[in-house]
Length: 84
Image (cartoon, rainbow, N blue to C red; front, side, top):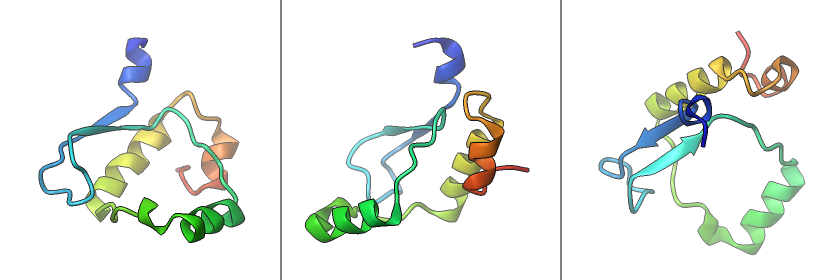
């Protein structure tokens, strides 16, 4: 993976994050749009997919990384509230 894409991944340690079983990465290089219906049906069919909540601190880090990502078009960032 090119270094530019690696820099758009956030490393989250499992420690202190109940929903993680192991250290993980959040890929902030792209946004994968999903409709409300898709998400609602997925949760209804498999409620176990909800494994926890991202803290505000973690969300703020994710948001800043997405805002700075040159791989995501401005109109996409704006649509999802990730545009300054």
